[in-house]
Length: 492
Image (cartoon, rainbow, N blue to C red):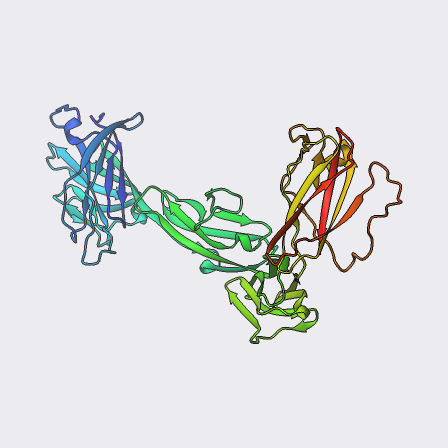
């Protein structure tokens, strides 16, 4: 005999979470078509979900119906939110009630089966599982449902032509992370690859997503979805805390983290490779040192180690290591080294302390107001008074302009012009003069000049100045009209 309802129904149960919901794979009881047939029982089914007895039962929050093309109308019941028990960390567990109602039952016996196992027969409970019981004669209840309770449950009427319907129960389980690489702490050497793994359970199976705390992933992305994340060629910039997140849409997401330490030899950068100072002044030499494990840092002048004294103060704050020299003496000028050493290697960087002037900065505009002369000016920062300057200039062509790194003197009375990527520069820095190599190489008045030869002029620093910033201007004469020149200056 054809039954007036679907023979297959589906229910979904959420366990170990503060929220629960159920799915009825067929129409609700009031939606079933009614076909009374005397002497032939008709059977209907209704599935419900209830919170455990530890919590306060609440009615459904909302009910919505969808259509399942295979199993008929689908009714979704969303349960109330809330925690149960005295401990806020305790989670609610769900009971599954699968119910059969028999019209004109007469003397028929209703049995519940799961596979070939008989759970109940009539009012007699057959299964030894203490969580299973029969309620009101027809409803099979499974208390404290667990994932292993998922499957098909058959409600059957014992008669010559047996009638049955099947309830499919699915248990939704929130995600739980069961394993991460090295228990959450991992050390790896610089240059090595790293494989981060994260495993999780839940129903449905959770998706695993990787993120990095307070930073992007090494590939520049915000996240990566896969249980395994591989990092090639590790360095200190790729270390940090990596977060594994498991999410399956049931309950709260689960997270775990892996703290990744990169072991590498010391890496040093200097704040200023050349430090300018003067006698009686204070000088500060700075090295930025990184390394894992933490390196030991020492300072040397030439080959002699520098110890802490009243004039030599050694400080370190984090990665910043500083040597402070108070009241600089003439013998303090020279080369200093910061040497960093750990178990993986030793690294050295050099800082030069000098009493020479800094590089000159031109202040004159590149276009001359005269056709055959040009007024050039510059300034120099120096802790000591400058004695003299040496000015170099020469005529250049277009090819020289494109390759040159100095200032260009334009004698064509035009706006500053572009040559390749270079623009005529108002503030071009020029290397300072090396007083130890500059002796008597003054301009030879009898030399026969070609157009592109360097010409040099020695200019005394007048008036003599003790100011930190010093400067001078000079009028170059005898230039050819409508030509371009370049200039350099040295100071001592």
